[in-house]
Image (cartoon, rainbow, N blue to C red; front, side):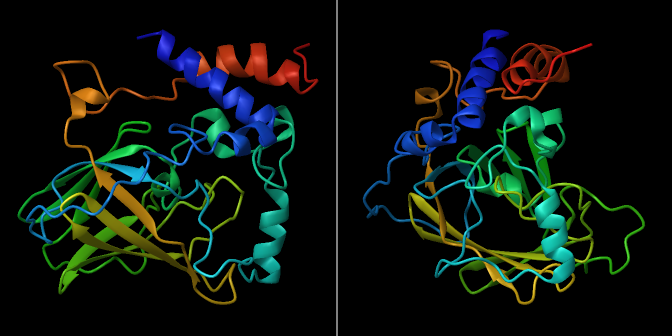
Length: 278
């Protein structure tokens, strides 16, 4: 499967070097697209508390965005950090060789950024925890459902934080804290501090769809909580249509330094941005 990282790198290159091309391609699926085309609501019976299965984002974008549009209200400290971030995508895009997106060096996506990608995720429910298995970078995330409380002063921050969940009626509520703040909120370079608290609210609205809203509360960087646009996932009923025939499951989609840093960055990205090895 050595050709898969290469093809991924070429798509990434087109999006980073030519942001307008990426914007024009958002109608399709994949890295630069809007995910799977939305499907009509299902009439099949379903359990609103059962999220098991592979789900794929439909519609929407790879940004956090807000429910009513407009820019988030950054504090002075947050604005300073935001201005220091140099994305290779969006209205502030710079040539990728001059950017500082943590993903460019194969760092973990972190939360909530990994939730913004139009990639499949498998929900695996167990009695005391919910596991989210993200295809993008093959990430396993644990959401503890056993009643434990979040650590208030964790000694070790995590890229994906510490997460606990509970049910409010038919809504799954996930609260997270204790983040490593070296990642970004989304592809546009919005930052978060070590004080960020994240809440995700999920609802299975019919047999085939899950909706999610994310709220970021970070008084160090944002003047008020930032609520995302609705994100929707569609059930992948036949995983073999997406992965290898007669195999199913998620494909392997990794950022391998041997491919991305040593080959893609040095041979393609950096020369394209006018940066050459000496």
